[in-house]
View (spheres, rainbow, N blue to C red):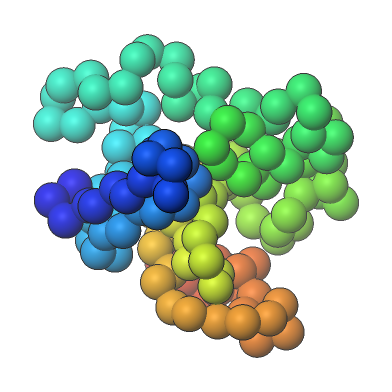
Length: 139
């Protein structure tokens, strides 16, 4: 990432879940780092096993919807009705920002999607529809 700026909260603490600013291209690079299991340019940047850890449902996520850092599409026991996006592969996961900004990673499709719009309200933006329409463009 070449444009990222991390800001601290008012107490001086780097939050990690917010106060991070970068271009869509750099957020795509972030997604690619996870898609490539923490390896970039042949060099391991993240500890081995870190990506698997972050994409494994947390014990306190009753529907399998959250790992460590990422929202998951796994669903408890791989049940489609428990997935965030039932029509999308269960290996999909996402980092989600303000007003539906998204980094969506789908390992089975070798795909990273970045959505950088600003939208208020569920009735205006549908992430599952967005993913489905992009996937339809790549048979």
